[in-house]
Length: 406
Image (cartoon, rainbow, N blue to C red; front, side):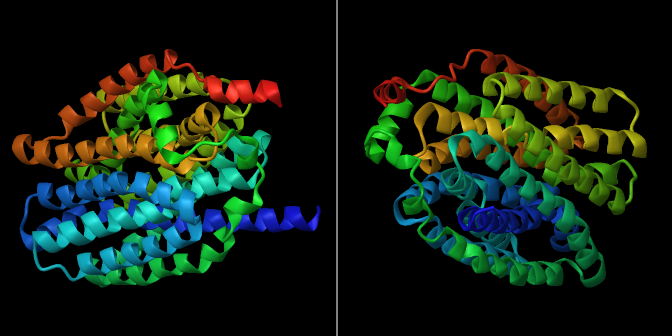
């Protein structure tokens, strides 16, 4: 292995560790829904709304974070995102009412995740590797986030049980600061890669106009809404849902950890297959399978076995959508403004996340059940599978003409 390849491999590894920290802490917050709500005497809708705001501000901030990373470099964006992430955890831990929860767990953590998560790091990783390795690199990065979920959720539960939710969040806030240590790997990464230089010249406004006039970009955006709806609802409300069914919190932690572990496999497989086969058809199969899995979970009597079986199947399909979705953005529009364009796609994902998290809390408080949200998640997944059949995944004409010239 040449020195350049060794440095590149090390850079990919460090980027993956950062994603594991980012995703691990965020995925743990669902464990805090019930204890935080009980401490303040609120219904579940209040803290669920905080976490819904988190997803919304994550999405709203993502196009901006992607645009700044495209223009000024990933490292600077990660530094700002880390500070916001850590501050958000601290503000949540010291909150004395719903406003503090909304600002900390909602706005600050949401903006922090945008600056340190998949929407910024995956485009940077895509620029580090050759086109034929891109889909697999995106899968590896997505799998790293899943590894963080698998590793950090049991740890967060132990902190929660041992020290209480306030102290657990302060410990997590300190841990989140470690993401700054990984910023040097991104310094100058955009300038060193030749992949962007091979693309026709284009500015940001032209890229946005081009994408907004492309109907298949909008179909991709519409489909990603459902992904966010399902994932955020399950991440936040699964612990409370299982507690209502009489299961110990250890079962919920194990369920989310299984999802995280299986997501590693699903993301890697999805990334590999996305480099070999049609990305739109991979997404069609994933969303169709999600719909079937949710329906089976609802109609089969619940038990520890069915919970873990559901977690296993859901984990394989969890973030398996990210490599083909982000890969389609790069394939259709190129790498130059991938951070911005994928950020816009991801914004819709987070609008779906906001809807799923808030609606779960609202409907539980008004009906005493999560059943309606579960069934809606299954139905819209089936609709999304159909939507992806009609996406034209070919590069836009500008890139096709450039390839002919080359």
